[in-house]
Image (cartoon, rainbow, N blue to C red; front, top):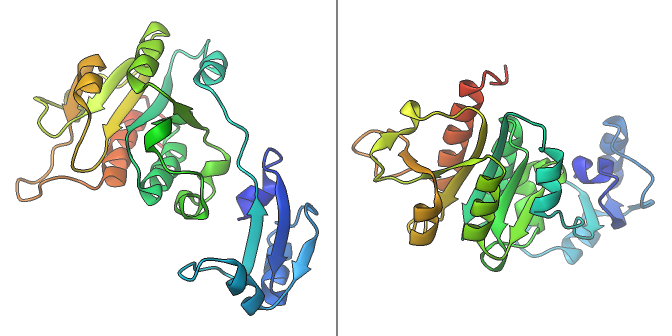
Length: 235
């Protein structure tokens, strides 16, 4: 919530808060003056939100962030010898996408790329799972992910796909330079065309008794491996 208030690129139409939450928000430096804060009781906020929505006495009516395209991101990275992007193939769970955005920011990825028709909207659920990272890590929507991967390859990115059955471990892969990590949806995994388009496929070594990792957990492990390989692991 505070990240959205602090983001000048986010257009906000309405801000509601209980008196207690307003004091906490002001103390945290999260009041930007846009839009003016409306002090209400919790029942007023409850009435505006879905029945299963959990809030902390604050609600913001926000418009979607302006779209960022892949070309714009590649332009910003044109002179970067090292760069990290995440590509999600038909990942539809907003909590997973939000969690991946959070890990992407934590481990230095510039942006996440999703397939436009098979990715969740930027809802409150996604934003909550991202814990503010939605405001800082562009979520790029592409119609054709295979074509997007080829565009990345033309710009010097190596596309590394995660696949449980891959022969090579991520521990043995070269993760330096310009990397695009490509992950598929839970269960289905990467689609055939994307697997074939990737430069290499790797697996995350896990205990034999465990079939697979949750998507967001796998993304976090892979992103951490990339950060460690390039010496940029946060401390």
